[in-house]
Length: 333
Length: 255
Image (cartoon, rainbow over all chains, first blue to last red; front, side):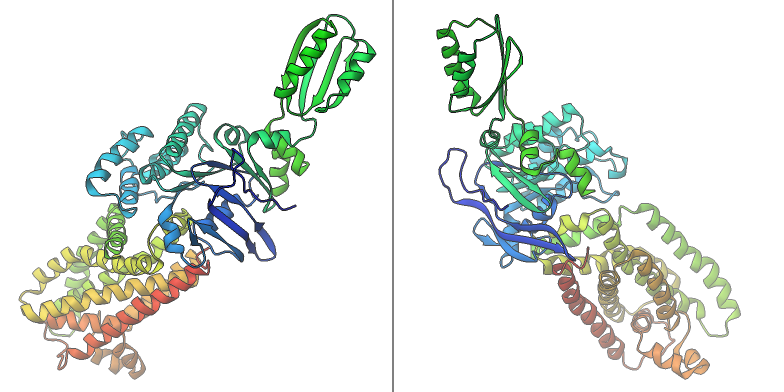
């Protein structure tokens, strides 16, 4: 299956800031990334979702011109990653999955040098290094060697590099792996702020919740291929009958009512687990529920409770791969 | 371009001086080589002024050891993934490679500077002009060794093999040079050794340093020859090495 990601969250077609064209990387006979066609809009957070080994990091490294594609190319800004790699690197900032720093370095060294090499003026750098290290709560530990820092602290230093750079395109690879829940929320807020300041963000993650709450659109990768890419809402809606309403009645609904419920366009199936309970599988739950409620009220059927649930990105992932993300992870390993 | 090149150089110089323990131990080693080995060995060797001869050679050997350290840094960086980070920066591959080569040489030179000052204190008087020329030669020599170390590190691609290879190379290149004994003695022991030692960059560097420091042995009729030898060595490993390194990087050969 091949999928393109070409429409904005509002449905309008925009000029993408990143466009990959059959981007492929093979290691030996193994496809790490297999003919990836993906477009990223300016100013959005695009979640790149998939289990470990799905090809997310390899795709990122190709976009960052760290490794060369075996086939295909990508355009970052207006620059071809094969022909103008230096121009491409000028637009990008990356927070790697594993923090990239030597153990003898200190957070201050790492962030300060990164700011210099990314072209911040001396006065701005001095101000921003303090600001950013404060923001990631690393100012007090700024003079410690990296080997004395915890995994979470190193991860925050890695994030600090992107935050100080404020790149046009920020790529963050599993930014909250090994980080506690409080730390996760802080990093999520930082990413939102970075987006609000004008950066386009590619968020590679295998955490479905993270992808869902941060991303305007989510691209799902599995075994090097892009399976699907759209807004979380559209992805969920793409699962036919993925939304569920559980209705409890004060008395058993009659057969005609059940039959008429089945007649709604959005309704896929109606099950009756108990005589007074109905489970309705349908699409676009938020649009249909008022109609169903009206219908039942007109029929004068007493409702004691109603519970709605929509599919999660877990369900979307399972729908497209036939596996849960945990199973996919195990199969990759 | 120059600014980013300088930043790459600055990074390597700063990093080297983070290894404080290594620097202190190396300095202790250097001083003890002079104070113990140099003093004692000079009493049993029948070469006039061997102590000063040895001290000058020791300085060049130490410069060589410090300059090859950049190759080990490359493995360290590969292990910690720092190489990927460096490759993702808005720095051209050429700036990166050239900067590292210069940075590796410069930091070795900065490190050896105080040790050379110790050597000069021991050696005594120098001819200022000759000494300046010999320092320029040592500067280029350090860049060349650094470039050589980077090239070998990228070509060998295994830290264990690199470690062993550099140990063997060190044994051969230092011992088949005039760092510790004059060319005439090497020549007398085996003419083939003498021929190899005559074209060894450590020989060029050691002879020029002694010439600059006004140590009478060897008598250098024409310091231009070893100077040119160092320029060739520097050019080969700085520029050819840069090309090899650049190609390896682009081809993903660092992985």
